[in-house]
Image (tube, rainbow, N blue to C red; front, side, top):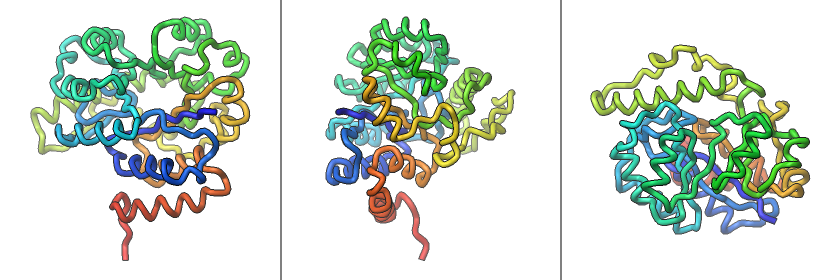
Length: 313
């Protein structure tokens, strides 16, 4: 049995994710049967190709090389969330994104794609990368999903509205190559989801242009949020608030329903989550129920020692 989790933000959550991978490797008795880390996904900022969540900040080449090496040496790929739907041809030559792609071009790492423009560019210039079809495409028609699975994507991330729709899921081909977003915070059937993704893409481009001109001034993302997505009441919901949603997939669902059907790829979202919420989500999904408390304590102790969290005296 293989239950493969794709976990968020190898850059901003570098220390937390490294410690969690170490814990899984050295204390497997804490974890449910078959748990593996299939990848860490995200981007190194500032990545103009990024989508799904606006990512600020700046890192240097040394940090990029170190993170790639640390996780790849553990046999864990990085998956770049290059899913910006607002890209234009002029953005394909971005020096930073191409530098990252060259540094990680070792046959192990992967890219998540949405824009046909960028996908074609990556296929032509970086053929060693395995490509994942993004949930940002918002493919909600079962027949369109089956057509997507007939293409040569390494993995297809299903739209969250297919979660728990077993009439559709049971008939899908390539179940082992389907990835399910288990902890979506969005309201099921959200009619603004695609527009929100486009807005995030526009904001990412604006952020990258801003830091080139005004590196020492703060960026105001609200100027590029014409539909007031920042006021969405659902975007910051945590693991305890989403369990009643029809799109929620619980740990018991994974092991008792999805894995027996042939599914093995599961995505945990959380690139913008705080460390406590993200750690709790990891423990909820991957730890044995009877080991959650002990694992939580050990992880919090490690977080304090490594200054992921600050303990006030």
